[in-house]
Length: 440
Image 1: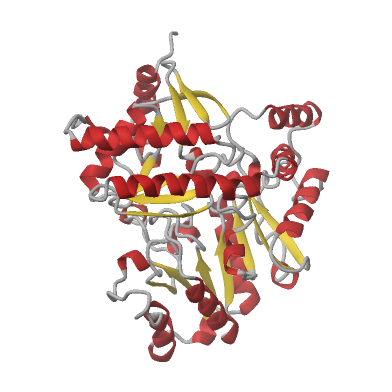
Image 2: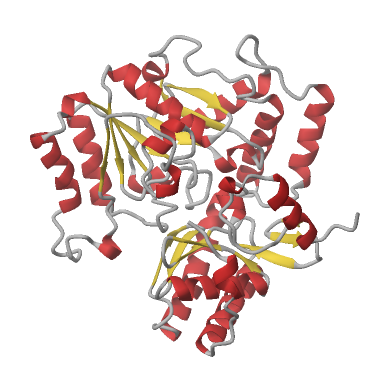
């Protein structure tokens, strides 16, 4: 069969459930190299999505492929639920050494970030003996029942599926660019944090709260970076009330923000850190890393999966971390992130009616456009012209390229974005954009 984008996308509609899709354009990815992708029609794209930030190392890495092959030649996996293998142990030791704070920590494996959120919920309740959880409006923590219960970003994630976890309380995330209290920085008295304090006084007993689940950067609600003083004061509030502080680092860890963990930007050591997405070097893997006494609070098999800590996946993760350290990718990400944000700010100055805000850390960047219509059309035109990216919410372009992207590729990407903006201003972009682009 002569495969094409159209052929594969038509077969996808026939055989795959649509509830797992947030469709953009009918493109079928065939292969990739570094920050470049190629579809079945032979088109080349610069990747500004990194497979939803799960491909920090980029695509087609030969060293990882060889490491995976070598391991699979021996054994693909053998469940650690009953016996053990070397690579999950080595990876756990490595993650503990990289995590903020001391090394009196342990690792609990899952196969995805969502499952690891569920693990953190179990651990939080088991350790504290409390049942209530605090999360935030706009949070996306995953698609398992537990992670959906503490998420608050899409009504479709909750419709028709019945009861979720009880005793989950959502508060406003500190979205300073759209402050619900109409405060600027000089006037701000952390009113959003006062919401939680008031709840503790009026209807939510602090001594019944097990944990606060917090995204150090709110990824899917628009790449929102909270003020450092908010995060530090939220952490202090948790410590004062013996509430666990759980950092969801599924999207933002492993170099994405120019640090191994985005919590390093705030100089805070969480009680638990949840990881997933890029952790497996492109293969499925999730884990929780946290203080040893918390990690041992439950009895086996409280959180056991046959394929968690898959031997081959752990080998891929170890090879990725080796490459990161050898090639100094974290520091490169800071430099490339500053370079890209500067170029985007130049476009903001040039097109103030189109680009409303640019914000980010490292190579995790959000660009706000005027409205949903403009966002759909500009996003569509970028993809059509060889820049693969998506949007978040009503009007944010999600910019999270592989950390191995080159400066020349960044230059080419911003040129495609500028050309797409000019096409939008000139009215040259087809209304097909409204058909193809759905998003969150």
